[in-house]
Length: 347
Ligand SMILES: [Zn+2]
Ligand SMILES: [Zn+2]
Image (tube, rainbow, N blue to C red; front, side, top):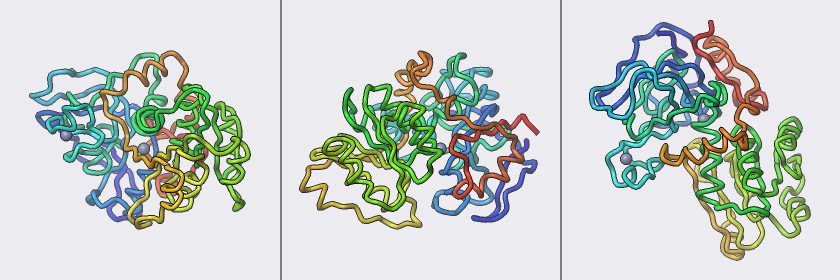
């Protein structure tokens, strides 16, 4: 099969012919019809993820039909159209049995712990635990955004922050996951403040229902959010993952607010300083959120089918493998506001 491959971290990225994958006994092989290009893929290429072995094929936001099934798989057959969370649980441990596969100690992640979906085919483990059927009404490009960005935003705001109608939600960083969070918060009846350095991203956030936008141009973002929200946000999401955006998000909160950390703070940045003085004095809840298990997808998919959540609104362009390979090193510096989707069937 054709795949996007890199041999060294930060090095060249090429499309080449590699061996077709075969399914593990509990796994499947999926024919990739669409796969999102995500900032996490850039982190894997840059060498920020300790689990990546070289040579490597990135990609973790995928959709397509099942092409081959392992002998022990019970729930899936060839031809089923599926996606998967980027965190795949083992299916056997206490966390997986409790429906919390997103924190499975034996998790696998396509595009990180093994070869991913920037290829014509991808192998996925523990299929009975991790695959999600995709409704016909959800197109390929839209579905590619579900397994990482939308699922992450959905779980962060609903299962972790327990956002309620009428609350203020401040989202720091409105790239793919941040714009997903804008939609999820608006769908929950919350009032959204979007914060970003990029005016075009803020314009898109406003078009998706954000009530206010704040340009992070070096001024006191938290003070502006406190003014706009009459005393601070009830919920804040750091969808970027730097020491500055994490602290900004926490300082945007009102007393007893809830902070959700979604943006990855990769090893290269170390363990960032978190304003724990504010966390203590104002009784701020600091919550981590790490993807979403497949068992939690039906609620999100119902909102997508109803048109309340519109992942397709985030898709900016669909490209082939070669263009995807060219774009991967540029994600950190030159990515467009919206989501780039790779269709490996294109030349
Ligand atoms: Zn992703
Ligand atoms: Zn597990």
